[in-house]
Amino acid sequence: MVEELIHAKRMVIVSNRLPITLHKTDAGQWQIKSGSGGLITALGAVLRNRGGRWIGWIGADDESAIPLAKGASREAGYELTPVLLTAEEVDRYYHGFANAVLWPLFHDFINRCDFAPEYWPAYQQVNHKFARIIAETTAPTDYIWVQDYHLTLVAGYLRELGANRRTGFFLHVPFPPLDIFLRLPWRAQVLNALLQFDLIAFQTMRDHRNFMQCVRTLLPGIRLEKEDKFVSKVTTPERSLRVAAIPIGIDYDEFARGAEQAAEAAWYIHEKLPERQLILGVDRLDYSKGIPQRIRAIGNALERYPDLRERFTFTQVVVPSREDVPEYQELRSEIERLVGEINGRFTTSGWTPIHYIYRSLTREELLAYYRTSEVMLVTPLKDGMNLVAKEFCACSIEENAVLILSEFAGAAAQLSRYALLVNPYDVEGVADALHTALSMDGKERQSRMHRARTVIRRESIYWWVDNFLKAAISADLSYFPRAEYFVPQMDNKESA
Image (cartoon, rainbow, N blue to C red; front, side, top):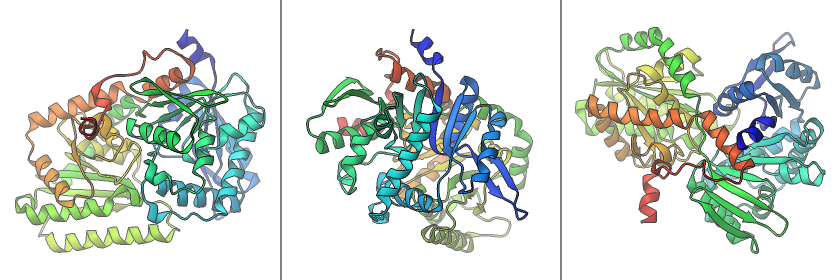
């Protein structure tokens, strides 16, 4: 019965951006490209397989782009419904409330928050616009799945508009602890709006606990019940909803097949760097990714472990992001300065310790780097999940690689037993983990990576979608996983 219900409903994905990008050429002609990023990779495949609609901003404030965006539906494999935002809305809703308030707040960077009062009305206005378009373009039988922190108010506005829809919300970024969330001037409004969804899901149990603690403290009179290790029931005076922890996965088979096909490119990378192990970092330019701390750890390892010199090459790929924002420009400058200092200090004839790439890699390049690298450094200061860690493991088809993973990445909840967990703020600790990884024998590498890949293959993107929809539609909780790897090691220590 559950499966019938799941597949009978059309899925409608709602996110800040459509899974395409539009820009004008110098000649004034629109060009369209497929978007990139974990959310698009994850959900695009799901909609193509199941059928459905994606609603999101077109990335431009020109009405002439709307027909082009709609016309891309055939190529995408599902319907695209564009939302048009004005330049002022983009500035105050997207650059303002979403990225200058919620993004730093949810990643525990209070000092980077800008609580400008004019951001909140713009955020409300855009969320209402999204809700109105959802109400106009969907049917009562559709399941509305809203993605991420940009659109926390949508379900409440749908109710105001009288649009009776089943709604779910998934937060891809972390949810902060109470003492951090308290700083948000609109904390009660955001919490009350989230409680208008039928299901709220988070990446990890830590995020789940943080949310429940905020509701318990800030919204008295609401009843909270634990139904399962990973599921809670919230009862307000008007209705009941559920809160769950369901970590997002990747299309494991697609990445593994792609790594197989990238064999020639992978061979070329290693031929250029013979007799050396390759360490890889791949990140979007953002202060939450911990790139400067990671580069300092490379320098610390070379200083404290002279035996590592000339034994590895560290390739750091930084994907450009928000290049017009001054603090991101400063971050890029800091990264490049650190790379220059370490290379200047440790480079010898025929060997440069850090290879720095500031651009997006093609898919073939990325898969080749994943496949050929012996060590992957995924050390964000805070991250909801971090799909790069999972992509790397899926592509390590020889299973002769080591993942060094921040304990503050959501992926640590699933991979803590198989990766080398580190505190990204601990430069010497990361350097020690590098030395351990580079010295690890093949048998241990294979054992760790094989078990990590087993988990990632099992908890794929399709597992994530099925479990989210079952949680949304079914009262039966038996499908929820109870394996220990869902609980990170530090949570075990806390509960002990």
